[in-house]
Image 1: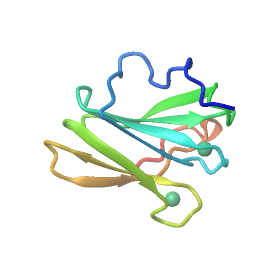
Image 2: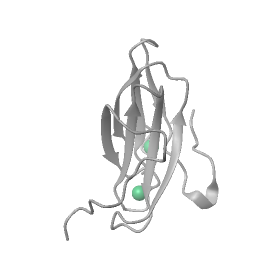
Image 3: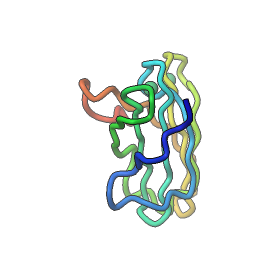
Length: 111
Ligand SMILES: [Ca+2]
Ligand SMILES: [Ca+2]
């Protein structure tokens, strides 16, 4: 099975990601996606609900993150779920966010 190419990940209004990464953010065994949006000053997550890349739950990891420029993932606290590490041009910081929770648990779990 190829990667589906007809199902956009980004919620409307947050196009043009400058960087993307993959990881299993909710620990369900399916590869998810995170995206950095330079012009929208934010990092989004995209949970792969069906494991086939056809159903996504999109949400915001962080807003007002001035000129978000890069995003990567890794399990920083060894809880079995990948976390999201981000940087921004004007914030001059590197920040780490706990992975978003599955939709039924609500919220992004950001730190
Ligand atoms: Ca997942
Ligand atoms: Ca983790």
